[in-house]
Amino acid sequence: ALVDGSQRDLDGWHVVVSAGGTREPLDPVRFLGNRSSGRQGVALAQAAARRGARVTLVGANLAVAAPAGVDLVPVETTAQLRDAVRAAAKDADVVVMAAAVADFAPAHAAADKIKKRADGVTPAIELVETVDILAELAHEPLLPGQLVVGFAAETGDATGSVLEHGRAKALRKGADLLVVNAVGHGVGFGTDTNDVTLLDRAGEVVGRADGTKLDVAHAIWDAVVARR
Ligand code: CTP
Ligand code: CA
Image: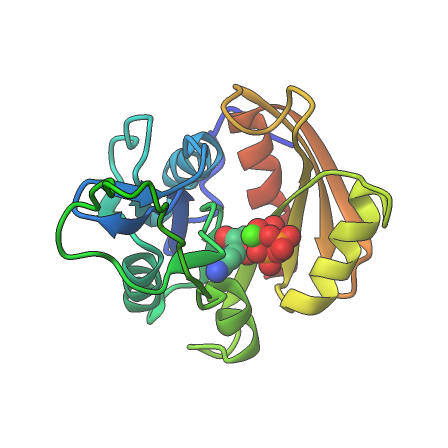
């Protein structure tokens, strides 16, 4: 794969990339969130812009700066991310869901700051499941021929390996490509490098990539271009 960005194979494309981690409010000052920095999504946006694409980056609480030359739409919650992605995706050739999206949100956000109680009773937080933005885009396409790319951060456990979990997720999500990365062992979140396996919608391995998040981003765009 060319990683110097000298190829302009995304000329004329509009690509939408979501990045970062969503936050779901508990009260005006607190949220449920995750540790995603947004680095891999930002690298995807940067690589696509270098390759000639018009890029909309829907950034949820990014810990890193957005690259120059992309249209940044900042969001905080999963509902905002969904609206921004779907609005931008109306004329997009590709949508890449690199964001770490909250799976659950508090059923009710308190209007005022939650206070400790004199009797020591602790609050219980009721959660509701969020909309699966990726599965929705993959199962009910906004545009015929639009490519949808998802990510799966997996750890191996007693019920299966990283790749087995990835395969099951590929079949469930229906995305054209699923980028599977192993997390939780010093790789993935918060680091500058990544190691991924690319699966098609049937769960078959169609590529692997490792290196900096920019190297991995270019490899993902290579795979997207090959499927278009
Ligand atoms: N995703 C999404 N909307 C959600 C949850 C996840 O669009 N509400 C997307 C992520 O952006 C990612 C993909 O789905 O591209 C996979 O996310 P992941 O957390 O690995 O999968 P889940 O389906 O949420 O399953 P689980 O967390 O239970 O493994
Ligand atoms: Ca999840």
